[in-house]
Length: 37
Image (cartoon, rainbow, N blue to C red; front, side, top):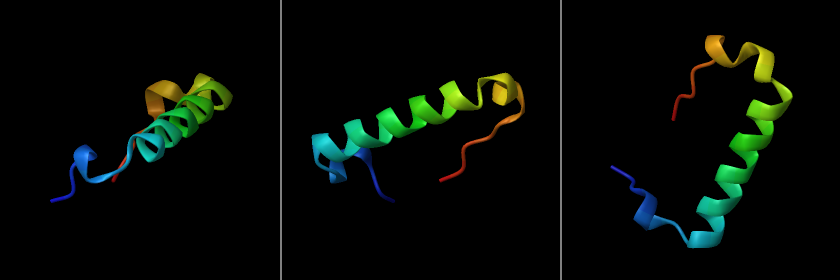
């Protein structure tokens, strides 16, 4: 199983930034979203 520690800190930060941006744009659907993966 892949863990967060398998990735460089910059990659993890980039993923967090993208997720936050998606939640900001699609915020009104937040209660209906599921993140898989």
